[in-house]
Length: 218
Length: 58
Image (cartoon, rainbow over all chains, first blue to last red; front, side, top):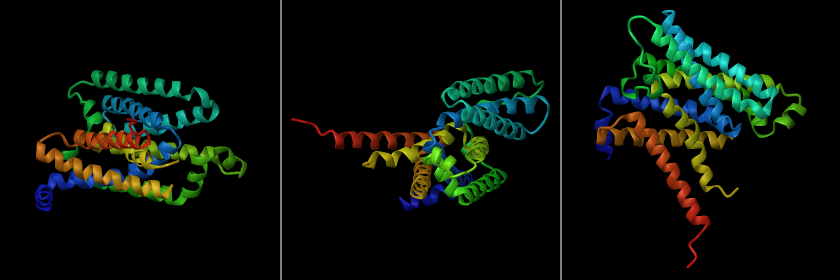
């Protein structure tokens, strides 16, 4: 078995795929805990799909698609966060609206772009075996940023995740922490999505968190 | 929360490694296999919990 693993990772592309998935594991493990504890998995999906609008617009205007995706995901995260904080009950509707607008805008603008047509589906499923050194460096930067974010705001994030009312009473800047958490979720999801695909990002945000719960008594 | 985060990172690494090995051995798409390995592990864990908490009455 050890020999098999050693043979597999003798290839550069397999080593890059392993390092990319390990880095995604770090970022998604930390961010996923916040996503699951705050019950905002749907919001994570919404942000990621809204980013498709940015990708389409960036292609249309000849800019870097990643820049468009990041801009759109941050704006949509802030938009959804503000609405969630103001009207707790109906935020799911807005997430659904942003989700569909993002996808539709992305598809329309990519189809309007003359010349080379980008394959939006490649963003959905990613290409783990085609991860470049630049992608790895970008993912390492995101993983480090997430670790720093969680390390600096650990107590505040824990407080708002378990008891938002108590945090408000203790004069914590709940709205600012919540919005910064959403922006971090958006950035992580968008950059990891480019590398390993949205499906794997959503799986890594939720499954490793829920699996141990199957063996917990309370 | 710290324990949850560390456990989650560990499980992500385990799913990734297992998924990459299986995808290489079976010549399948790596990302999809990792997702399937993770999802099937979760379903298996849920089934074990169900069986453990509701034992069959004969």
